[in-house]
Image (cartoon, rainbow, N blue to C red; front, side, top):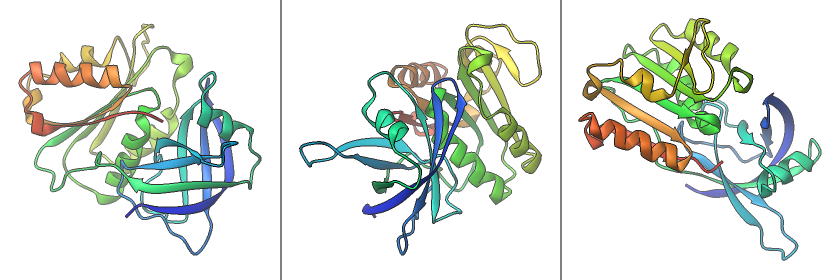
Length: 237
């Protein structure tokens, strides 16, 4: 059910160049009940009095109903990013939601592969943290596409998640570098998918910019992965 609720900005942390995690405490008595992978609608105040609406996937898992985080890329002239960057901590911020159909399909009849690029990892990370608490036996792999090592974030968090969930593994795919350290591979996400011979045996969750998502979808369909096994979100936040 989509509702309007007020929050207070309580966290602002840069995690990579131009990427910031914003944390919000929900004003009581409201609570946020959502499914991992869903998004919220940020209401950005405007001089006209009619707020602009911007969509952001929830970065945190559904276990905490009083606090949530957003993973935001700071773009030049970005309306929402500029608004969030300029307001002070404890400032009131209004949201609507939750909404969205990019959620986990249960029961899990196949192993899972998550494909994410940039801040499109936000809903995927929420899903992975949720799965870590479910102790499912199906294998879960994240292929996380970025350009360079300097852009990498969530590395320590993903390593910790791997300790908590022995069914989970991850790999950063760096398109503009040739890393040699564990947990990294050169090239795009599709380079790693080429190494998997039985792609139709997996369920896929894909999130990133619209062009990247569509390209990955078409790649998977070309490898005879059924459309019903590819779930995607063309990321807007």
